[in-house]
Length: 500
Ligand code: NAD
Image (cartoon, rainbow, N blue to C red):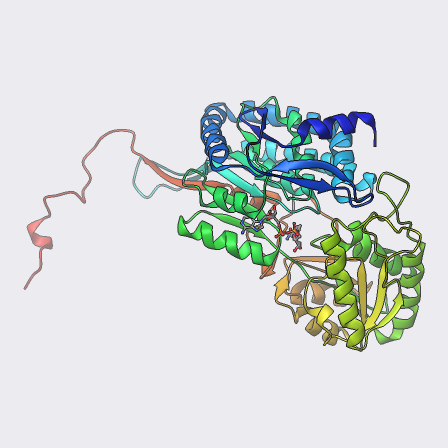
């Protein structure tokens, strides 16, 4: 670790970012453990009720100042934030790798991609602020005006701390809101390290309160927060949605996935194996859109499995600060959870084709080998999110069967298909019950295209115009240029009275 980052993490330990400054937290502290070394690398404080109230009050003041600016001024400020974000990305990236383990190339990338989202929304928000309808009364102007919601509570998980906060913050801020973010307990320092990038904005417009589920729940339930953007597990999402529903707060829910990955014979299987390895093992499989279940046509099953095993064995494991492809899993608990999933699959008859254990060469750190298993669809690991470096592969005999098994899921975030048959590709696009379908291009995003899931994965959308609308409300406005009598007013005409 560079000495700059050592000093930075020590300075950020136990702090919140409230009203534009770092403030020493008064609540109890918890250590943050570097998953590659198992050493404590920082501590975070649990935000107290008083700290939450202070942040919420600051957010309300800042939001008024922000919305009082012109749309063009907000756009220009957000472009400045984007530039600053890209500059701070390597530092925040190093902090992220220390906190949750992913290779630096991935953690550094997150800042740049958030900057891109900010620039997209900065422009989109000033492009229009509602619409003018054809008037229902002569001479009048009737509008649907778009306004911000107020203060948005952003709750993010550990796996993409900067990217996921970046998506939510970009759309929320561009829409005219303030944002209070509650990072994951595993990655609190990363977002604190990012805050200098927002210094051009009114103090209090973007704030970080660290802590666990209770801090998140308090922010969601607070009478003076107005909307919630949640990314995380289904169970936590359900708790958040219930609390928000008490006050009818709009909620964006981005929860768990269990993405299928279909392989058809027309695809070039050596290429598919590379794509599959990336889709299954990126960030140790700790990606909401990880390929979690492979359905591979009989005709290419053996060739695909052989290729995927070669790819898995070639991945370099180690500290994310070294030249590696995979870091450790984010926490000891996560690795134990994945070990239990593999043990259960083996008990149910799965064959481990590679991996399935901790790497002997890395006795320290929460590493787990990228694992390929031959399975059947009935096994437990095909029916829940594994969120680990696992690629369970199941044989299918047709596209019909593959689509039917892919849709046999309680969640519906993304789905992949590899095929160079156009008819198969279109069938997959239309028949897969997911919010995203990738044809021959696994796991990619586009700021301008709506991202999100169906079923228990959640509700609402990020990115695209849909992502902006998530954080705006409509106001009905009717303007008559002069005060004139309305023919519908009292007194009613006698001839219109009840004739009986
Ligand atoms: P998690 O649900 O444990 O925690 C996510 C966040 O929610 C954390 O900040 C946590 O402190 C907070 N939280 C937990 N309970 C809460 C409550 N009752 N009220 C308020 N806040 C609460 O998830 P995790 O383990 O950090 O992340 C992994 C999960 O996130 C996976 O299921 C993954 O699929 C999902 N995820 C989904 C998307 C998506 O876009 N759909 C993206 C990334 C991750």
